[in-house]
Image 1 (cartoon, helix red, strand yellow):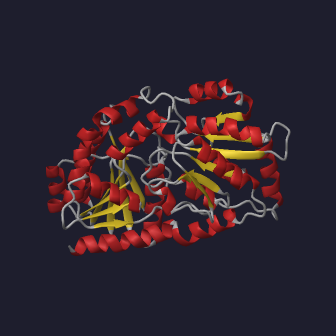
Image 2 (cartoon, rainbow, N blue to C red):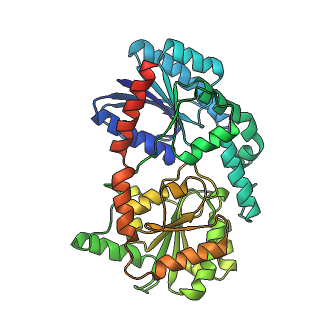
Image 3 (tube, rainbow, N blue to C red):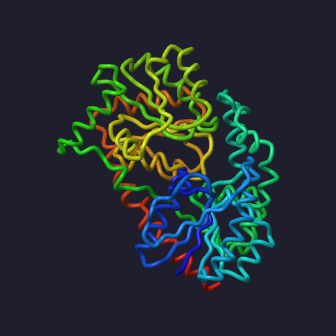
Length: 410
């Protein structure tokens, strides 16, 4: 099959969506298919993948509205692509592309059946921001994108409604996302929505090998960057964009309380965004500034090493369609502490980490202390086993191949 993927994110513009489209494309090629990705321009040259063609299109750099401008340009490029190299399946990655009903019908009638991946909803994003605001997260109104979501989510949600009504098949990335759409949107009685959890790169995100001299040396060097000379310290890692709904303010407050019981703990946050200075000011105000580090940029190889050198990964997000960070931690053989909300319990339980009440510092504190003080824990081993079994891209490609064939038969 020739599969056209329309995704607003693709490397080097990384993110959860960009990562999944990149790896899914590669896995589909291995199964004998061809993939053309139509994505946004301006982020640099995409990495070479055998059998994957990448086309970039222009877009208006306006919060939320870029989904419409990118959608129009992607549609035009898709029509030209189909004329020169007929497409069998069009795979949209929502909600970062907004098509009207007429655009959906032109595509399905003149080009190919449409499969729409639902990575989350604008209304869910808005609710996550509202929860973050109630939890006193910093700068909920300071980010233009967050402001746009809070003010315009209802307006742009109608394009998601078009997607679930006009696509041949929809694929939610979690049961929580599917339920979210069913409860908020005008779902047709004939709605065909399947659930496929995204996987992660299990070769890059792997456990620390204590039989490898190279791993041991890199492990020691990595930890020495953050341990302040205390080689027995506990390194807590958080990964993700520095945005209000990611819950870093709550995490830093919880960490300041944890320091009273586990004084040799350290917090490392890896993520880009406008909140770095605010978060560091908060850490200093709480008296833990010298034990909190925020890394704005890091290569994937360095990040993977940091995962497997950490003692614990914490993911305090107020909203996710699925959330890949917990899976990256589990794949790296590291226990994960995250919220008991939305899709996270579909991946995480007490055998691989701990769940806490979203936005509740006391609950977070108990979960972090339990993992960090647990003797002989098998949580990291169990987490790796779960990812290998259930959350990998070979499984994703096999699932989507079946879905594409179903769409072709409708």
